[in-house]
Amino acid sequence: MTINKEKLEAAIKIIDEKLKGEAYAIRGTASLVLQGLDMNVDDIDILCDEKTALNANLKLSEYLVEKVVFKESPKFKSYYGKFLINGVNVEIMGDWQIFNNKKGWSKVYNADVVNITQIKVENLKIPVTKIELELEVFALMGRWTAYQKIKRLAGKSRQINSKSQNEKPQVASDQQKLF
Image 1 (spheres, rainbow, N blue to C red):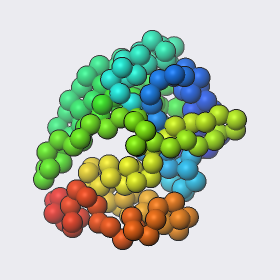
Image 2 (tube, rainbow, N blue to C red):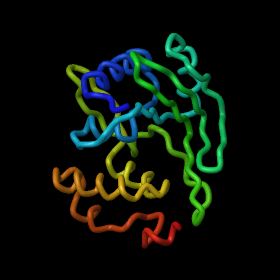
Image 3 (tube, rainbow, N blue to C red):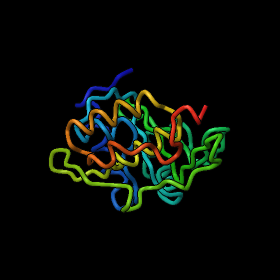
């Protein structure tokens, strides 16, 4: 189910109100749409640290679907939980890592100052992950179609510099090496 911008922004306002003072950022396609890229959004992913992820159990308790706990799958590990806010699926990922067959487990991703930027949604400043970070994690996940679309759209709107556009992803010098 694709979420329209109004529904996305309404859910994000609630998230911002409930997680005020916590270290978090909206990531994934929701982050990209909020930064003006034309992407489809099916849910809201929240990147954060362990403490914020666990605090979400209380702060977002009225929306809780699946309690935040440490989870590990063959592809990901993090403090993970699910929420449903005004009909929008929200996933929390604290101290998130991605497994790549060539590289093993990635570094730990969270909402530190290096990875985020602030955007305005009406009168609120909302933390979102930088486009360069999204390119990095989409490459790690092997989501090359989305990676190319993000790169193309961000390049057109000059949201990534020409150096970034010409660089190959850090995770592999050739996309085929991952497969």
